[in-house]
Length: 87
Image (tube, rainbow, N blue to C red):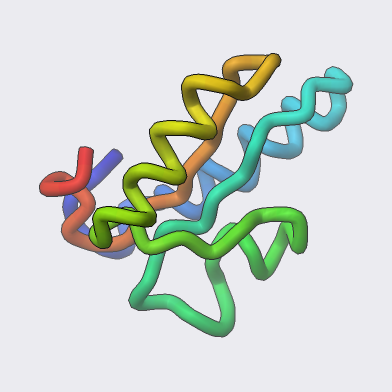
């Protein structure tokens, strides 16, 4: 996670997701970049990625529940600028 925008978080998330898919690992994908709503986020490249605002109490609860209950234990989240606060 990087706190600034433009540090390559989305690029790295996409490459890591591709790696997992090539090795038949199915992570739960979350696009938590709430500032980038329409293009360029993880959901733009992987339609199965759910948009989620982890800065809201309900959104953070959903993220933590997914991390605790996912059988593969792999939850990948693409965070937006200023994500240092969230992590």
